[in-house]
Length: 400
Image 1 (spheres, rainbow, N blue to C red):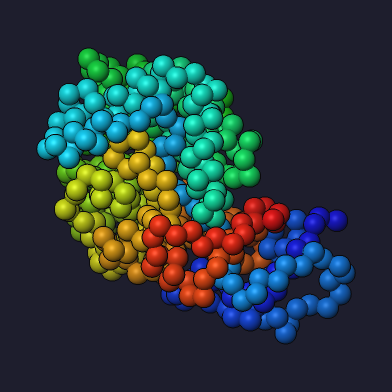
Image 2 (cartoon, rainbow, N blue to C red):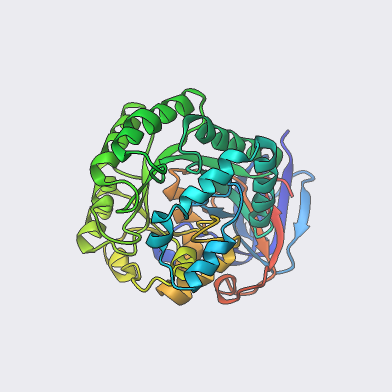
């Protein structure tokens, strides 16, 4: 019989209904069998005849779904601390990129770093997220911009899942930047799409992503990549409307994208298109903060259109070198005006939806037993503090 674990004397934030806030239960208990939640309810209603399950007294602590970081770039070589200095000295993100910095400088470092070293660095980043109660990390390629390195990055992402107690979902981000000296159309057709096909053949791709901006790829170029993804039956998502509005959100919505990410410059017509498509808005306050952006995403419009909002670190070496999902939650509240319940939904239920997953992100019978126990009384404490990690225990697949 699979292992059984009974957690007693706990407050549970189920996060299972958008209209029910935290779905908070107090004086509660939860039963896990194997890697699934079997039952939850009041301590006074614990079913009889459970046999002799392992028991954990939570001493009144808070239990939530384990957190999900649904947008990261944690497989990469090098760092861009010098560019951090350049920005503070007055250079813009676009100026740095056009001068061969930005994404392209990380491409060079990633190509030059061997697979073992890239994996060890990525594992350290994954460990930082796991230490904050994260059980699922989305990891993108995009720092190869050639077939060999894009596949190398995706293989490393898969290896993280084998070496750590964490789930990994991969996104092929070959359309992240135009290689220095290359033609964007040639790159999409002769490098990026063949790289996608090769990665798909190896089973390395869970979704296809791209960067639709004036400094990267336009909607026509992204459309060709998305069309090939559709032919391969791979869902899509898109970095769009981060620095300007060139139509990326509407393009993504036309392909029923799982998510549209950044979206600072998305307007109300874009948001209506997302609502119709069922796409999630992934808000990335780390990049907003680092780049000194002033254009905020239209949070109230997302609310009024019932577009789910997820929150992620966007951990990358340039625009968001942030290794804390708890800090991203706080930033989403302080910078974008999310409520604490929206921030927690954004790193649980809505983050799972942004990845096309239905087996996690909420606490309910039949869902995966990926859970976090926190040394807090109120769920809002998870977004209220920053620089503090209140995680008490993480449960992954039903195991402590």
